[in-house]
Length: 178
Image (cartoon, rainbow, N blue to C red; front, side, top):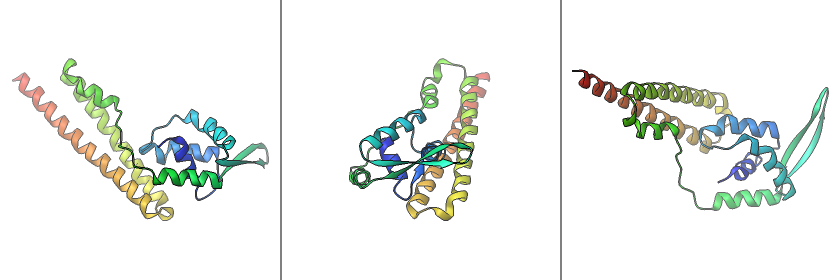
């Protein structure tokens, strides 16, 4: 999966502006796909040159023209090829987990602080995902609902694991004091 596949997928149901595509990457997609937002517009330009999408410039009163992108038949074929390809393994890249792994080289208080910050961050992400589910629930397909549910359960499992880690670290710290 790459940004091109995701962009083509966003255009399968309707035409979108570059801004609307960027918003999807920054909101809903940010929970399960990581991409550099600076690559979206160059990617759209390249995809247009490759005939995967078309761009229509639409005039707006008092504003610059907006570009509306529409997937072409060639783009649909490419996207369907992506959907038919084998599913790639998920990858995890986490600065938090790397620091936690090397936590033996810092104080217990530092590890506890990392865990507490991570807990608050994950709790916030879970709430945002719940809010997004409520906001879009009437327009979501069953597969999209399942995707959001899996994300929410993963965040909840992470919260549970962090809480267990906090309990363990505080126990170890208390035992060292005794």
